[in-house]
Length: 342
Ligand SMILES: NC(=O)c1ccc[n+]([C@@H]2O[C@H](COP(=O)([O-])OP(=O)(O)OC[C@H]3O[C@@H](n4cnc5c(N)ncnc54)[C@H](OP(=O)(O)O)[C@@H]3O)[C@@H](O)[C@H]2O)c1
Image (cartoon, rainbow, N blue to C red; front, side, top):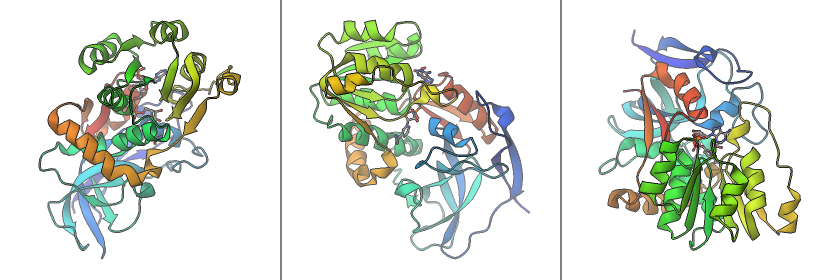
């Protein structure tokens, strides 16, 4: 019998996640039924949001918690079809689906998965790197693009601050912001990340949030105020943004990674949203599937022309997935964090 391997959650972390919270389990390679395909996974994703699901109950309205002792569903993954019992899919097709952190998956065709963001889909990989579909041509691109759209920031010409700006989503927002003609300010957690943003992306101002104080630095970089803040961090960053926003500014609440592993700290100056007539708009990329095509066309064009680059940190082998998650949350990865499975 042929064997597959999958990562199971062994226990929920109380604080920082680590390899001890997972185990790799050997199981028989699953068999597809009528209407399903068997996929040999090649690349799987590592996302901060997965940390919110490593607890008995995920936040209300979000994807559900990962179950203990079970494979982790709802993790966008690429693979190659090795057996097809579904019309429209052939052996050799590159596809995406949401059954990640395992070597093989049986996937139903024509079933909406993860709000449509990971419904089984054949991918055109003729002139792109396949793993870009886990980055700029997939959920990360959708999050960056729809997040800018919901705060009306696709038109350019404003002062835009993006936090965690060297990460998977942030690195796209920073680059798209520059390409759209915004005056982009970017923060990240190492000097090397800041140097990339300043010297290669060409943002107007970049700083290290671990060594420079947020509020005075923003005041210096944006004396007239920030028009748009793309918030990947929450907590102290959101509080600093409220201080630094211009009148009628807009904040895209993408995530609050600073509180995923510890106690949530809310902004103490929320009245500034009232005083400055700000808009704070939460959003999830997967609920904006309608802009996927437009996003892929625009970002695909910039990727092919070399104006947009995908930064990525790649871990090799399924066993490395837990370490990749811990490293990403601690800021030790750059760009999209990926695990190469084959
Ligand atoms: N709304 C949606 O649909 C959606 C979809 C995908 C992701 N997200 C959210 O977007 C955010 C970024 O996700 P991503 O996939 O692009 O991850 P990422 O930025 O590649 O990785 C997370 C980064 O957050 C930074 N970070 C961690 N703790 C921090 C802290 N206490 N203060 C400041 N920065 C901290 C670290 O970078 P530094 O070295 O720069 O500190 C870390 O590398 C997360 O909040 C995530 O939940 C939302």
